[in-house]
Amino acid sequence: MKADILVLPGDGIGPEVTAAAVVVLEHIASKASHSFTFHEGFIGGAALTAGLEPLPAETLSCARGADAILLGAVGDPAFDQRPPGERPESALLQLRRALGLYANLRPARMWPGLEQAGPLKPEVLAGTDVMVVRELTGGLYYGEPRGIAADGQSAVNTLRYSVMEVARVAHWAFKLARGRQRRVVSVDKANVLEVSRLWRQTVTAVAAEYPDVRLTHEYVDAAAMKLALAPSSFDVLLTENMFGDILSDEAGALCGSLGLLPSASLGDGPGLFEPVHGSAPSIAGQNRANPIGAILSAAMLLEHGLGLSEEAAHVVRAVGAVLKTSARTADLANAGQPITGTREFGRLVVDRL
Image 1: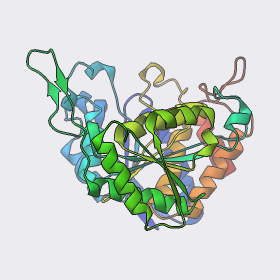
Image 2 (image 1 turned 45 degrees about the horizontal axis):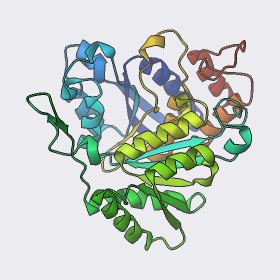
Image 3 (image 1 turned 45 degrees about the vertical axis):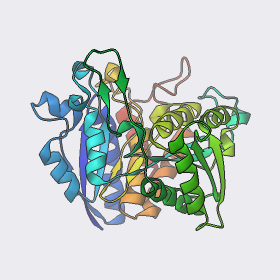
Image 4 (image 1 turned 60 degrees about the vertical axis):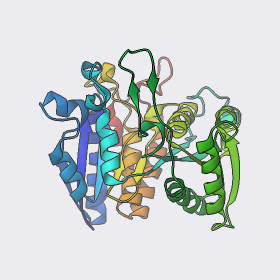
């Protein structure tokens, strides 16, 4: 296969973790006789520092022409005082909307060897393997009208969803469930919100097309509690934008660290693949960042972006094999345990491959 991959290192630890992921992709390409061409672009705080917009026109043009996009992290406290549309984080919202990336896939699992890394008892965490499917281009994050009143005494955001927006992301959840345990939990707040009632009605209608998949519904507060008390009870968790943002981070924290979590944003255009964690500027440039989320995002890029499921499985198994050893990045290490650096961990994964 020949593929053009746009790499957007972004801010903070983004360049470090994407570098580790690219090394893995290069190794996979050489072993499987694929030809991957990598291009880099500016985004977020890195773009602003260079005197550009958060999402430069050239970056968007390259993204539209790529086969897949690998992103590191976006966010720089130097620009925190700017209006929302001029901050680094606005680039992600713009990119997702421009490419029509409405379905966000966020897997979280308990990795053998990390049973003690999370806050839960190992027996509670055992068997956890949840796929959060989050609607990505609607809801409160995009709804209009929005803003702070001129007198600064009130503010408004708008929660809005259409049947089409809900149905198309629901189809992703049910199709994914067919390759897993065939269970979907749809999360909403239908006892309070009219939008959630529309969400529940629409997901129920879509479920009729997948009679082999079991659908249940949960209110978001109950789902959050169940994630903490019985995370292994979930298979595919389907929800709207803000609820998905919160619940996927909770799932990751339960499994040991946000640094473990990959994501894929899919839809009409080229897929965007990025670790869930932020830019972590306090450790940037110190070779302390956890590259696992980025490496697993590269695996999702192989599977969902390029259709290379076998190669993706090799990467996932290699990460698991390294985690079974004593190799631990700073966020996963116990007191007194040796710390494996970002670059070193990436090389260990390549060695396993």
